[in-house]
Length: 397
Ligand SMILES: *Cc1c(COP(=O)(O)O)cnc(C)c1O
Image 1 (cartoon, helix red, strand yellow):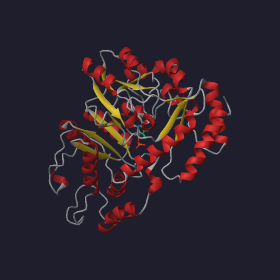
Image 2 (spheres, protein in one colour):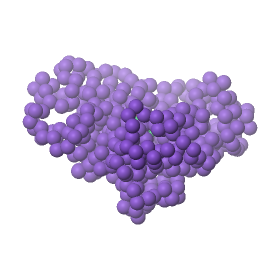
Image 3 (cartoon, rainbow, N blue to C red):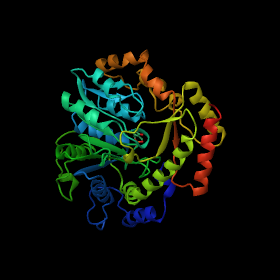
Image 4 (cartoon, rainbow, N blue to C red):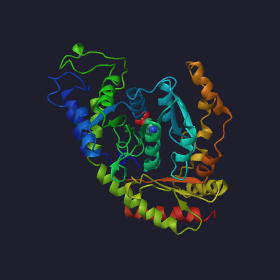
């Protein structure tokens, strides 16, 4: 899965450029930085690689989501439809702008079920946020059609799927805005970092200012001369982090080729096991192949298979029992447990999750296992893992 597995001379060189000037901040210091602008360079590289007009780097994928939501005008009283299966950052960002997360079922794509989305729309709904989990994508044609019909915004959380595509277009570039995470375990990494991509200049201009205390960046070399059209926060990335990401994005195609090859070998091995089925991928060619995700016949066999895979010394994510990614374990969200109180309407809207059940999601996530795919395996290690994975799963069926 993660780009950190292939750190090398390229990352060192980019970081060294910054160390040599001693200018670690992405704005200002025009003279001493001697023409080194790693964050700007990485934003340009993101635009080129993902074929979008604008990219804004941030300090993390979480702050990229928060910034995108602010730039799209999402806030108090607005409902954002999102899946029951995602990383907690997705709803953290919704809550951080004061909006209301409306959780809906996932289907065998492991992300938003279009029918469940339709059923959840109310007059307060402002946006739909699919989360392209584990390297692959939501059914974007269906979701875009719903957005069009109901005049809603589409914000793609593509934090786990940098480099994946849908019908030839980069995930993240299809909705009104999309976000990536470059945290340490993502497909490409800055160590910590994130980005928003968009083709909407107004959204971009707002992201640019919001992520830097509202600075409009029109004051030239003098930051003190910038205007502040609205409030913002410090969600800036540093030059050091951007430098790491610059080396990584240049290797993205190499990473994708390795991941796709490895996934094919693993999938072929597991296809031999009767009763195993695979995640539905709306555009298989666009899968970034960070994971091989498959289904067992029921919850019990999935639990047993997870145990068998781990006993064989391999990793396996059975999301149903995992603390981070599935609704069932989001106790802090269900308990509305926060350090600072939410506005009363938001707290009331969240209270229903204390007892709410998602049987349709349970039926998918309970049976599902994701096997993370490494960039660093040798051919022999890959073949060994494929054989062990298939044998472990077979042993419980
Ligand atoms: C990693 C991740 C994020 C947040 O990214 P950070 O850079 O860790 O803040 C958001 N959404 C999803 C789906 C993620 O996996």
